[in-house]
Amino acid sequence: MSVDVFGRRVQPGERVKFRAKVAEQNDGSDVTVPVAVICGKADGPVVLLMGAQHGDEYSGWSVFSLLLPTISPDTLRGTVIGLPITCPFAFFGESRVNTFDYEFLNFNRIWPGDPSGFLSQRMADTIFRECVTRANYVVDFHEGGRDFLARYLSIGGSPVVRSRVGDQKRQLAVWFGHGIPVREYEMTAEAIRLGRGGTIHEAAGQIGIPALTVELGGGGTVWEEFQRDGVAGARNILIGLEMLSGEMAAVDRPQAVMHTCQWVRPSHGGFLVNDVKLGDVVTAGAPLGRLLDPYGDLVEVLTAPFRSVILDTRFTTAMHPGDWAFQCGRLDP
Image (cartoon, rainbow, N blue to C red; front, side, top):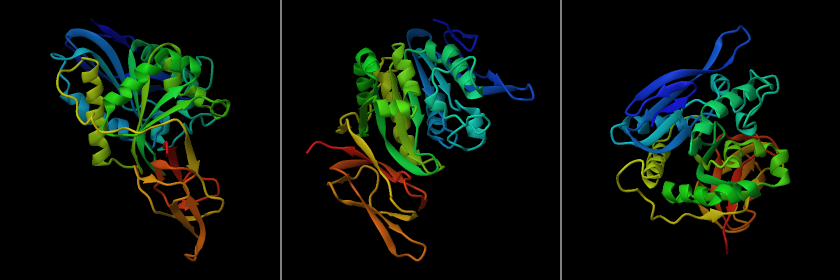
């Protein structure tokens, strides 16, 4: 079956790459995003792969660059759509937010967008209407950006989303596999206040489209181990959806599922020395890192709030008071 993406019809058996207009700059020139579409000869689901909503996160591009060339439309059942750079302005500025926007908006806090809003909101509205709504499933690739390293999967959302697509999101996480911890959270009033009601997995879930958020990598570069897991995990999902043939990889590894997570943050400014790495399991009160002053003297020891698996670690060293340092996912005793 053919598929329409940003007004372009892609026929069964076709592989196309093009740039789609999503907005205009202040000089009237077009703002575009790169789009890749592989339309299988046989019918099946439509899966949207998204990357670089935050402009300092390259994991999505790195996965797409290896995965998409290996998928043949001759053997694919359904359609794969790739958006390697979802927010171009954030990407241009190598920033988490769109610095060209009047309000410096975070793209993954404003879905499904607003056709009458600021620049970022208009871009999100166009992408949501012309691309996201065409999909049956969304896999949204993130990472730690320049300041962190991350390794976990995120599912959950508001009660409405959890009831509508919660089981499907859990299945996507299991298929992704590789022993990657799963953060399953319930949307709280505090999360909504911080804008998390505007994430793509929440907005997609509200209209019945399950979305999996993948957090792999960071530090402003591409890590081979995270890229490898991202490619294999995404392929697992396509196999699970019967879009590709083959055996899934590393789905037998235990995956911790956390319903409570907490960021550990310093009370002082200083230079952080990490004492843990991603995936470490630590006891309550265990030291995670040491904060030193400019003379090398100890200022503060950061400790785990509960028995945890480490989901994020700080990559850059200098910290202000209150900066995120480590994200801990609570493990059952």
